[in-house]
Image 1 (tube, helix red, strand yellow):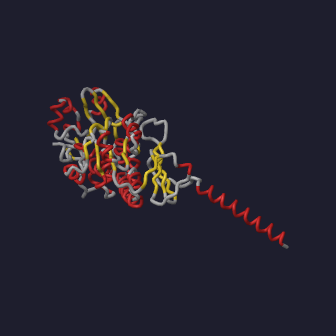
Image 2 (cartoon, helix red, strand yellow; image 1 turned 120 degrees about the vertical axis):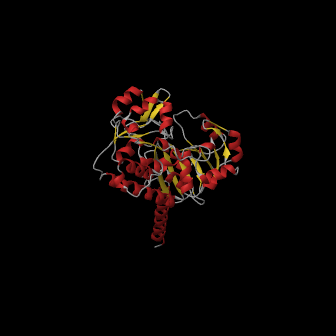
Image 3 (cartoon, one colour; image 1 turned 30 degrees about the vertical axis):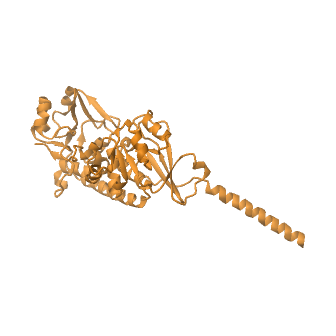
Length: 378
C-alpha cells in the first residue's frame, strides 16, 4: 500500500512540475492582436504588464523594423523581449522632432511633458508656444544635428525621431549616449486615417491608450461620414494643386495623402492616375497644358493673396481657376512665429481637411460649415 501511495505522489509531483514548465513557457509566448487599424507603419500589441510597439516603415523602402517595449511599473517581461529598447510607462518627459508630433501631445493633454524641440519657431500650437516663451521647451537646433549637450542635460524619457533613409547618424549617436530614441513614421503613411492613427503611438507611451483610441475613433467617424456626404455631389469638378518653386511645379502624386483627400472629397484631381506617395516635379508648360481649364486650384502655403501669386509668376493669371478666383490656400493660419498650422495639425486631423475640401468643391453639401484651414485667395 505504501508503495502504491508513493508512486501516486511521485506521479502527481511529475505532472505538477510539467504543468508548471508549460505555464512558464506559455508566459513567454508572444501572441496578441494588433490594435492599429489603418496605419501600415506601426503596430501595438498589448500584454499583461507591457506592450510591444513595432515600427515597420519609418521611411520609404525601410529594410528593418524597430521594436520597443513599453513596460508598466510591475510588468514582467519574457526573456525573449529584453534585448529591445525598454521604456517604463507612463513617460514623464519627451523630446519631439516634428511639428506633426505636437497635436497628439495636445489632444492627449500632455504638452507639459515636452522639454525639447528643434527649430521651435515652426511650432504653431498656442499651448506649446506659451511653454517655449516660458523657457520650458529647449531649442535643439537642426533636426539632423541635434544639440547633444542640451539633450544629455535634459535626459528625456524618450526622444521621438524620424528619418528619411537608413542614414541617421545623429539619432544613432544619441542612442549610444544612453538616450532612448523611438522612430516615428507618420509622415510616410499613405492614407489620411493612417497618418492620424499615430496618436495611438503616443497614447501607448503615456499609458493613455483608451483615450487615444477614443480620440481616433471620433476622427475616423467624422471622416467616414464626410466621405458619405461627398458621394452625394452631382458634379465632380477638376482640381489643380500646388504651384511653382524656383523653376519646377510641385504637386501631389496620385496615391499620396493629398490626392486621396481630393478623391474622397469627390474632386477630379488631374494627376490622380500617377503613382507614388510623394510629389511630382513638372515644368510650367506641362502643368499649364493639362490644367489651364481646371475648375479649382488648391495652392501650397507659399501665397496669401492673388497679387502675391502674380508677383511670383505673371503666367498664373492664364489659368481658368485664377481668372474665376477659385484659388484656395492654407497659408492664412500661422503661429506667433510664422509656423503654418496646416503642416502641424492637418495630418492629425484629416476629418477637418476633408470637410474643408468638400465645402470648397461642393458648398451645397455642407451649407453651415466654415472651412478651418483653407480660404479663398483675394
